[in-house]
Amino acid sequence: MSDVLTGVRVLEVATWTFVPAAGAVLADWGADVLKVEHPTSGDPQRGLMTSGILGGALTVNFMIEQPNRGKRSIGIDLRSEAGLGLLYKLAESADVFLTSFLPEARQKMKIDVEHIRRANPDIIYVRGSGMGQRGPENERGGYDAAAYFARGGHALALTPDELEYPISPRAAYGDLPGGMTIAGGIAAALFHRERHGETSVVDVSLLSCAAWALSPDIVASKVFGIPKLPRITRQESGNPLINSYKTKDGRFLNLTMLESDRFWPDLCRHIGRSELIDDPRFDTSVHRAENRHECIAALDGAFAERTLAEWKDELADAEGVWAVYQEPLELHDDPQVIENGYFREVTGDDGGTFTLVANPVQFDETPPDLARAPGHGEHTEAILLELGFDWDDIIAWKESGAIL
Image (cartoon, rainbow, N blue to C red; front, side, top):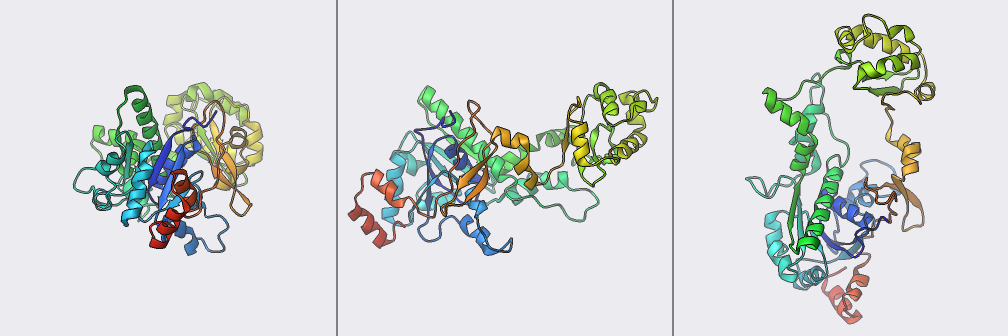
């Protein structure tokens, strides 16, 4: 059973990826997630991929699909009195209110904690932000490239010293793990309310998520009194069994064999270099560290003799941990990904199919079934009818512009 949150309703007033990704995870887990969008503009993420940044025709708006799958969309103008009233009506039946708006905007829009709790005192109120709810910069926005990757320390920790500028992150590099973190906080708050009858205000920021993900570096930097831990080049690896090696056909293998004395003999036999097992330069971890340049060179020579396909066969039963460096497209054909249901096929509104990545949590060994993201305001009428309003009400709100 994967629908562990069946019966839970989430009211989402959020845009872009970070906070909506949390709603997507909750939808994966069975929650009814109502995405509130402005009747005219909707979530600005909808237009990001249609602006031609990748070139060519867009067949799947993937940056709206991944963090919004499985939700229902309702178009409400929260600036109107009628629209705000509808939001409060939705909040009455919701378990969770999820937002990405900053403090001043929440107050101006009348959707802050006190406003939503007035409609539903038991609702769990959840805020995702760039910099956190307190401090001198709590009103600053924060996309993940800025708040997570740059300010959170990842960019400079990952950038080689010889580069003039810091490297750039991949799309939603911090947003998606951040959204998963929000979803976990919501699950804990739901459990606490169920057990103790107390509701919660849940806060997660991109900056806090960045610090958590980089915490070994951050803690060590203070312990040693240095700006950051030094980067170790592959030629200087003190353990040659923790390194990358190039194959004959220009692909790369990763070795992560931390207990090198344990795995050294087995590795040598698998790469056809049994003579290296007792070589006095390499026979212990201390000797391999002392003679790391020669050891790495020997392994370089061995791995360069065969193709990736050959090494995959040869290393299949090796004792230590190793992996292929894969391109994202290759993951679609990865047997482990396929067998575990980590990617799920979704049917679009045009009847065509595409693949989305499931959230990493599975319950009872069951991958979630995913549904496409909703169209802008697609479920407005159905949701209002569920609330008990009639078509005369809906038509009047449409004419006033309060709803889509």
